[in-house]
Length: 230
Image (cartoon, rainbow, N blue to C red):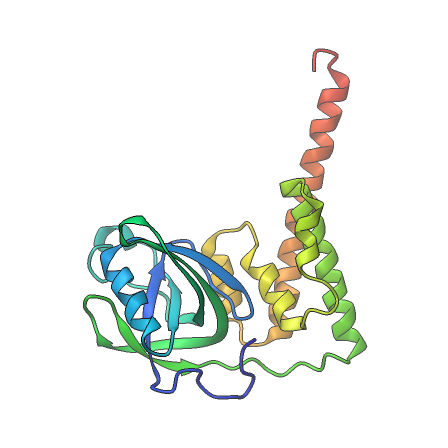
């Protein structure tokens, strides 16, 4: 969970950055990663000996031209704590990051072999979980999210990970992280400072995608039913 109003999760105010293409990390979600580049293997090992914190940031368009150097990344990312580390052959490793807090990623105080930046916490506005409107919004989002997962994966159990006992922030951010949309759109949701507004925007996107998926499924079913060769 993100520390609402609790200041920065890093005691030093400095966090190493793991910039990634296509990945937008949200607080209160879990991000599995495989680390294979030497500089980021070093980063993980050094983080394990310290605060166990990494900031994940989405790379900006054009990152391919300078990937081996210092490609630009978005200034808003999420700080996560390493919750699990599995060493693999050849020095690679699998790790699990638990999202703790949105942060503005500022000045780099170290460039090589990986970047370390000053971070400014971006706290979420506290939500009253007992508010019936919040409960209704959460249940509606859970239903839409679960329905989309079932339609896209044919695995009904995938929706069982989240339920009404899950905090509102975790439900909203899990839905945002899983949206099958352009990463820039997920980044815009991450940068939205009002959790209720993030919920509203994510719900609209989710409903649009679900309607499109169901419509395509209906059209496919009609085509197959009208052609005896199928």
